[in-house]
Length: 95
Image (tube, rainbow, N blue to C red; front, side, top):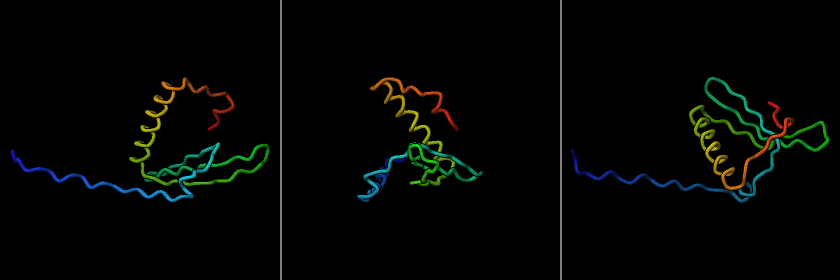
């Protein structure tokens, strides 16, 4: 067995532009997929209006999508442990 040290992993510097940092509100999301990609559309449905606008579209591969879903599940568990359960109304369960 070798006693050589492994080089440290390079650090990743992530840039966050000011307009992106402010975020966008979405009250609806749609998910679609092909054999090689998942597409997530984040949408704002205007109250009492027959229109909606896609504000952001993310396209990613299946492996990253699975990691994203796992991270979201872990964070929902932490959120509910801290703030209490999130109750969904029957109307909120549209697909």
